Image (tube, rainbow, N blue to C red):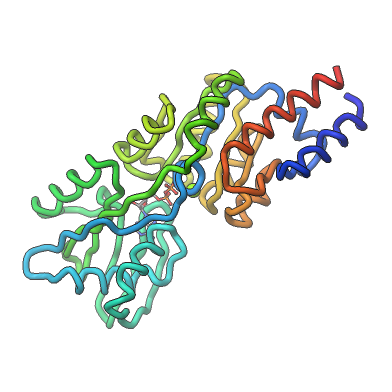
Length: 287
Ligand code: ADP
Ligand code: MG
């Protein structure tokens, strides 16, 4: 490999908005077989919005939103931002003892009472009405979270995300380039399947815990060989580093960008397609 060709490739990448951390990255991109795509913020906009609230008996929607919104005001998760935005109109309470539980939710005290907001499968003994609300919401491809106050489940909040306009086209191009796309997410299986179907991805790894993303990459590597990973979140950093080619969205967290070999400057999967094409074109020049 001539260093000159690699430098030229790196320079061309920069002009396209594809920032390549070093010449070796282009060489690694050559033999990638599968590409794992994080769902939220990578395939979707990650700009979630609250689309429904189902309080338990005797609780008002506004109360439910106030507890959840206050609890989530300590978190930067896209789910949290959406819940805070929905709750803000009614005003927030006093938050203390905030604890973030990665891949699960938050545990806090709101106005002196314990409040947790979590993924539904982390909540024991969900009353039938709330379990049905979770089921219906997930059936629509949404993400449902459960609010627990003083040890009692007090309601469900349903959130929806939007697929980015270029994701479908980009997935088609990645397939044409011979890469198998795999959607990887901590979100529920049905929400993940809905997004995957929308953009043309057949393989889905859902309900993956933050530390499970690395294991998922290693399993894929054992199965197909070299694997690229595209992500944006703090949760994605270890998986980006474990992959053979980590690609971070420029809109993402610093942790993701530091762990990646390539950073794409616009949050657009078409730039990931450009990055793969560039690496192949550069290496053709060399050989
Ligand atoms: P993703 O891989 O989609 O970015 P995460 O690993 O961050 O997902 O989260 C997985 C799941 O954990 C979410 O779908 C949600 O159910 C739950 N969760 C994570 N963070 C929060 C939070 N701040 N509030 C409520 N639920 C959360
Ligand atoms: Mg993400």
